[in-house]
Image 1 (cartoon, helix red, strand yellow):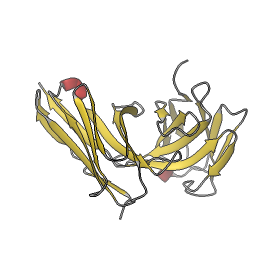
Image 2 (spheres, chains in turn orange, yellow):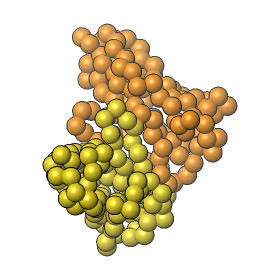
Image 3 (cartoon, helix red, strand yellow):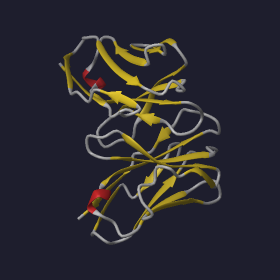
Image 4 (spheres, helix red, strand yellow):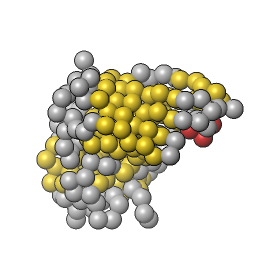
Length: 110
Length: 113
């Protein structure tokens, strides 16, 4: 079993839809949770960062962490075609290596 | 530049040849990471540097892979006697000391024929 599980998709939604992306994990020591966005032929870029449980909102993006269920989510409101990318969850127990999910490919069509 | 710089952006090599991939981290970032991303796969951790030392080499897939970092800055990932299964995008990232947020370069696409 992988430490971090993420549905690879692809996920295809119309413009304006609410998108929900999720990851589950098995290591209860994880306490730093991140979402990265990766456009084609580019490196991942940090989108959201959360420490421990709770919610964090930044514009159209909301990150949720439920440590009791070992489950994290990223919500995108009013999705745009420019949101089309691969979204990777990542987590760590401390300031060392991040463990990444496989990424979910999102396509937002006009 | 302001970001993590990797070179070359693309590398095509023949099976059995050695390759060197370079990473220039963000100025002031003491931590440096190498990851590998294969088609349809997530990011696979290879090695982590804090300054010039590598406290975690656990992800290097075989003894054909090695990495070094000099002057607390530029890092080189070397793959000896390349195999076709080494074909992937090799990503470098850097961060401030004791920071979990990584900043990635655009990667080197390695193709082994």
